[in-house]
Image 1 (cartoon, rainbow, N blue to C red):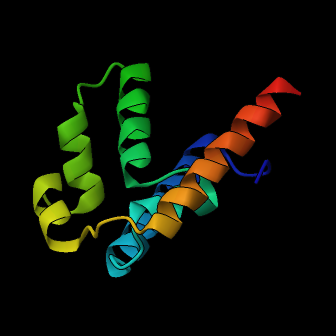
Image 2: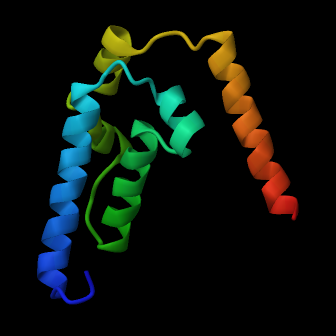
Length: 107
């Protein structure tokens, strides 16, 4: 993508991000813990990254507003409707992922 001008590249990146949000919205069955286990990020991470990007650009965006955007509704509503209790297997997989990350940092 180096051959693209900055404005076009930014537009394409923004479009891809919006498509990622639509994809996550279309797959509410994918739980945040599943995303954390497999990809080491979740919807809340995306919200935090949006806030960080806003801060870098001097824009005012708080975490709750960012979560509303990422989740497509207030987080409390999404959580009540779609978030399931993590299974023992999910918790174990998440803990194993976190432990592996700590081991990598030591190397």
